Image (tube, rainbow, N blue to C red; front, top):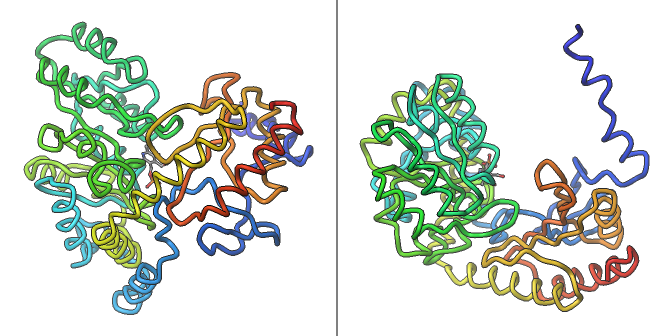
Length: 396
Ligand SMILES: Cc1ncc(COP(=O)(O)O)c(C=O)c1O
């Protein structure tokens, strides 16, 4: 049997393309902050995770350019060997201080961070205990661990009673590791961390929170989920990414110094992969400094989100409620979702179409994400366009 047969036979994307409704891999020709140029036309970006709009900030751009001039374009080696720059060490120290954890270790992406931590911490015979709606990197990290005979169990989404039920059914002596998104990437909901930590403590289990969508969005000055609940000291470990608020590329894990030291010497995804580029580190450092110096940007982001949510709800759209920067607008039917996406795009608003299996069947959505740099004019235009499209497709 030709193992490529499934590739030659799979044609769903071609069918959607033929109808002119394909939303993915659209080329952005210019990216000037909240407005991007796609297919020669300006469109408001309402789908980026560039939450504070810092990819366009002059200090961030200049820092990246200066790093290229000083260190070159890449590290050509892993952190373990020839790929550790003073920039990596400085960023780790500054992040640890900002987040309030003993130590931080960088990875080359957020995705890789989860793949690096989970199979290294959870080993043969241990249990990874995961929320059912965790990000794919956590699921895949757990799958790698499973290959090494680790057990993978899941509890109902953000359901702490179910977490307790699952833990109560596991062998008392086995090692267990609870992993949850801090802000869930599809629905934008915040994990019930106080209850999760209470249960973890009762069963003597360690916890890691993925703060990819929390850093720069919730918590004091954007310090993330644990800070949001005032529970930084009680949270064992946090991971995250530089590809969202910190406007660059890379990932991090923050935790106790001895645990970070163990990861440094045992984590394959770290040891066998090149370290983040100089420009990525320098841009992240500059963005982190802006976040520290100008925490009001976080307030602006949340005010923008509130404004948009209110406007879309007033029109009659069905929106999943949360207190973060993600506005999930439920469309339902898959074909209708593609049509809504295309019409929004044609009217000059770029959002993300989320379809099964990323969401349950008949729960296709426009996942709108906000940026602090969007102005009231941009927001009003997004709301107007949604209203127009909602009427055209018979939703409103
Ligand atoms: C919850 C969550 N974790 C991890 C990642 C991966 O981050 P990165 O883009 O740095 O690979 C993402 C990105 O989409 C995410 O949403």
